[in-house]
Length: 115
Length: 112
Image 1 (cartoon, rainbow over the protein chains, first blue to last red):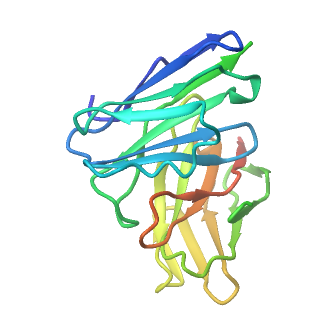
Image 2: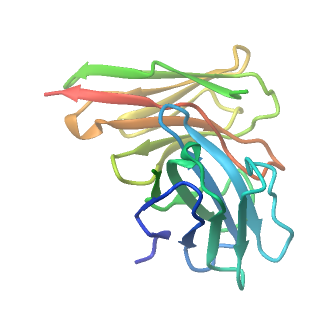
């Protein structure tokens, strides 16, 4: 497919475990974003990657959250020592390049449930 | 704090009616205002977007109205259909920003 692909689609884990979420952006898109969608809270920005530049991590809620993007393509979001408040849908988006005129294309997300 | 405020939280409209969703913002640096449509289990998809140099943009049954002085913008869905039932998010972005700022969403239900 030509869209943004995220895996797994659902993840259930116990509190305190680490989880890793994966995002495959649209081929050729240099900008990649992670957002978190909690019930009734809209989408909350987490982190942004642009090419080989240093990522903008300003939205990460705590140091338990980290992300990397290898080879300018696939990205993984890691949450260490998960807490119940981490339960949410984690969405990845990509755009051709940075800029407000570039539409962000979203994947279908990973629904994370912390027991 | 919420940079883009959206209302109503939920909306029920009869088939054929007009659905109206409103958003307001404070940051006058915002220069791009998109609307996203999200179906259950799917990611948001861009529906329509506007820049502040125009007051209205229409694409098919979907229209954005923009009021720069009031710092408000709205989505109008004409001739609403059951297939339009989804959650709608307004958003805003400014030049130089790395992310969109989203409203909290409106769940629209169109009754046949």
